[in-house]
Image 1 (cartoon, rainbow, N blue to C red):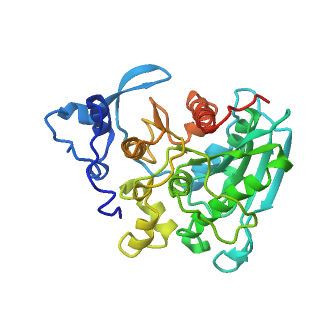
Image 2 (image 1 turned 180 degrees about the vertical axis):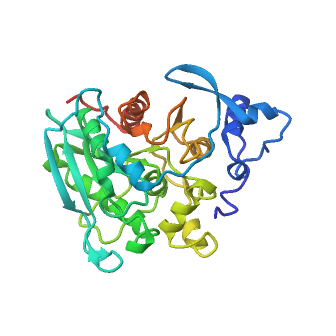
Length: 359
């Protein structure tokens, strides 16, 4: 788990930020910070609830009890949603099932990891989004975010909706999943001319487990990637994390991480340390935008609070939108929370370069 480097106390720069952060952090996440939850400056009642701003204003919100959602139910719920009420936006061009890796180990056989491209209408060059789903859901799990990918494309982005080998049984976990995602970023840059994209504006957007994997690819200044079909940089120009499970200590994601890494925390300690986002952010910063919901019962929003505080202390351009009442999947649905996710993408791209053009 996190090294002594990651567990050093992080002094928050403002008392208000300290109170809001401590109110949301679980005890394991609070271990990353220098001020304990029992500090006299943080009343006990504040540690149980916190005022958060959201679509309905500022209201006191009690933290939910994390409840795992069966993956087929979660993926079906995401995939079945129309993204704009009454409509299903269609990109001008969709190209499916493109391989972006050479043959790699996929467990019982070799395979090539694949993605789908959604190209907006209009004249580019458009900024590009590499979108990675949660899970672990195996190869083909990208279908769960196909509707969200259409929504992003309709807003003026070329979207590369990608799979990764997101569990150890198919040759993934660490380092496979991280290498796959870096290969997808390289593929997006190399394919920019073909799809009307801008190779200099590539945002990596990850939901849930994809947010965790994406955060490491984004925060690690070293170039990841192996067996990529495309050359170039595999590090994105901006990162957007949607309800990412960045805290590898969190009990509610222990089952997912067991499958992802291929074993319990003790037996996969080296892989977990090497893929802990709190061990990175040591090199060149990129813009980071985080979104989480206060009613997320799958991944505790304390993970996003902790990453936001960590990167703030590091001096990165980072912000967190905690949305009152938003759930784990509402961030990628036709809701106000889904619109907030789109706004986070817009802000990240704008911070990395020119803003998106409307299609």
